Image 1 (cartoon, rainbow, N blue to C red):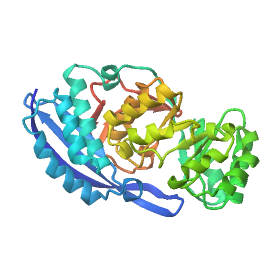
Image 2 (image 1 turned 90 degrees about the vertical axis):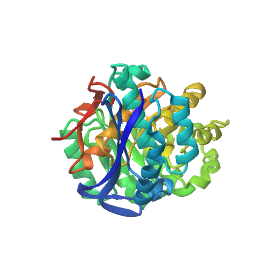
Image 3 (image 1 turned 90 degrees about the horizontal axis):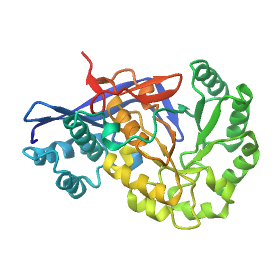
Length: 355
């Protein structure tokens, strides 16, 4: 079935509250959207959250690039996936958010053509998993207050942004474990903010508490320095900014492995097709998978959830980006109750336009 029309647009989406991670504060995020329509009127949706910090891709660059590229899709048979993914590789390799938006719109169409949800199209390995919910870099009091609110709302996995002051980080994390030590898992994300000494100190002071994961503790160019740490530390450390592509994944599975877990984000790797390549590498090498996100539309959150549930290597999900948004173009996509996420069983990505 041929693609007949491609519409590209963007929206600036206000956050419910300013959001802080190591080094910056955000008040809104801009996403790009693509709507592909077949000759039979079937619609596939995709979205992207470009980030210069993550992949060197600005919103305007991504928007203009996808507008220009979308002309190549008109008249193409959507089931000719080899040709489509070759076009994406050749034209959008350096624009992963734009590539991801097109990629998920194609997958949305492909699964709808088979009258299936995307997870049933891909093949299901999981039915439901708990997502972590993230607390940004903030004061001790706000961190604890936010944690209490999330726990009261049913979330059992908290991810804390750290990386600005290791002593304050240790104090916060220790206090969080005191809140509900038996029922809440704690993950942290240093966003490349630690030195070797910081990581060693943080781990020595917190690992006995039962810390679940430490995400991207060091700068990307210091991956080899992770090998200075014991297997126990590296087993719970997560490659995030260090992992963009299947080639990165191949480099990171060379023994000894610097990380025990890979964090796949569609906005880094360029969509579901690339993500599943990384997942296969992880599966073959015994690496656990975490699936993360930016502040994104439900379209791309749903795409990541479907992809995550298709991989047997998936152990963790961190797909809370939509909770930060005050507005979105669509509804649906998934069901989240007490922090447990599952797909909604609808065709394709399971999303639909808000009226």
